[in-house]
Amino acid sequence: MTVKCIHSDVSLADRYAGCLLGLACGDALGGPVEFDSREKIAAAYPDGLREFVGGGWLTLEPGEITDDTQMTLALAHSLAERGGLDMDDLAGRFVAWLQTEPKDIGNTTRAAILQLVDGVRWEKAGERVSVGGRAAGNGSVMRCAPVALRYRTDRERLRQASIDSALVTHADPRCTWSAVAINQAIVHLLDGGSLDRVIDAAVADIEHDEVRQSALRAADRSVDEVRSGGYVLDSMSAALWCLLRNNSFEDTIVAAIGLGADTDTTGAVTGALAGAYYGVGEIPHRWLTLLQPREELLGLAAALLRQSGDSQSGDPELHHNAGSASLR
Image (cartoon, rainbow, N blue to C red; front, side, top):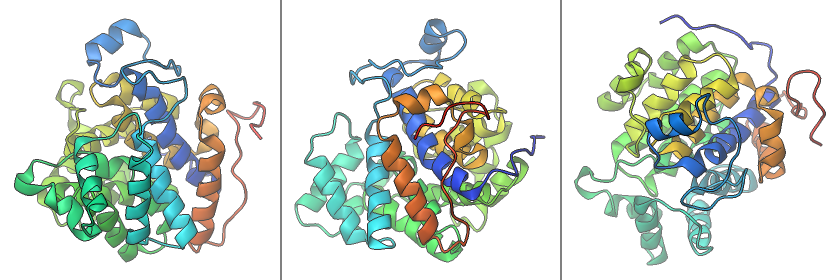
């Protein structure tokens, strides 16, 4: 499959901001239609869902995030404030988040965090709810992007941190290695890598054949073959499919939401990838103005860029194309 190689001149700061803001935008766009079929979404939005509408089973406000971004924020804050991955700190943040009684939380995630509440160590909490291979949900990949931002320049640490940050709630190897694959793809895109090599980057040294094969087959599927439910391999491959089958940030995210089912998570994973590639400047201005944790995410992106050890810095340019007004 041939894909365009563009956007090689986007700054690293813009890609970092784009990754986190893109994740949150995909989550917020998809949240109100979570669990709707692709047929229902297409009937309601013939040109695709392109605005933050709010509503849905969670009664969301336009631009409101769900558990996907909330857990991403917990991981990003832990990385930024501790200087790296401190799993005891992250586990404590997950417990504190659960105690806020969030509107939505995945069954596996809830069960694992309750293990933490009961005093189970983080290394064992996810394992206890993954017995029999029944817990290969997408909770590991929906929140993994901050690890890519923090460890972009340290590939070995990137891999282990991806596995550990997944393991606390999703210990199934399909979940842990899918987090590695998504983060390796994000790093490739942050570094200005082309779309036609993103799958190669994702599967590099992946030690789980099912994860590897799912990523390798992602781009060649027809739309009818793309699944977008809660299974981690479906979410990973759907996000890669959307990234490779579209030529703008907006169209990529709209395509992800149009797949139906677990729309907030498909949108979040796709948004992290697309944001890392296109940069924050390609995220629609009308989305960013409504996105509730925008400034918080911007600050975390800047902090993780500084901690990554890269000499490049600077503030991301928050604009939609060249002529839009700044959001600051």
